[in-house]
Image (tube, rainbow over all chains, first blue to last red; front, side, top):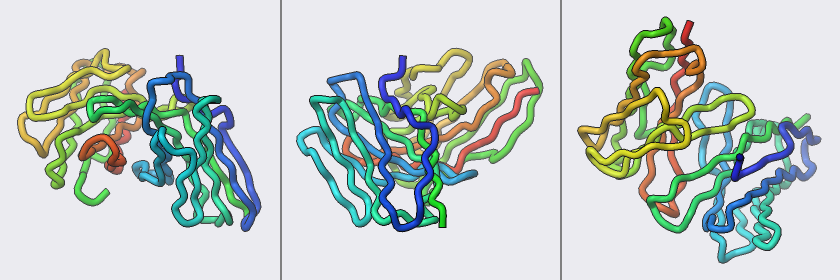
Length: 113
Length: 112
């Protein structure tokens, strides 16, 4: 039973428009949420994170929103660029360093020039 | 993937043979992890380590064992490889909670 869900396996967006990637989780004990980006034949790379005490975190073109009551988070990319085409993994973990990070199945984003 | 390397990058092996994958880090991080990536499943944790000789199981640990005799090396062993273990294996390191994981470039393992 997946604790972190990404219900859209793929998403296509025009260059310059907004990309919105969604993620839902089931475990209310999760305290920390992360997004990773993965290009083919490479390892995932950390993109942005948010603590459960916040509802928004922004880093350049990337913003993550957290809605704890709905157990939902989203990653917004504005404006989208062709280089953003990759697989995006949503992930979540508990409060301590011993808590494992649980990853979602990923969403493949294609940004069309 | 600076500071973390995986070897080999690619391997083809026969069913029933033992296989060892190596993860090496130069960051002196305490935490190390082995994940496998499969379509539709994302990244699933196999085993992890929170210090030398301190390891624990993840969600898909059956058929795998690990060892960590030095801070910098974390070995993953498939005791008797099966076709269901054909996958891409990623090692990750972490400095602790609040730090994003740094992943290696992966090992593509094919069991025939």
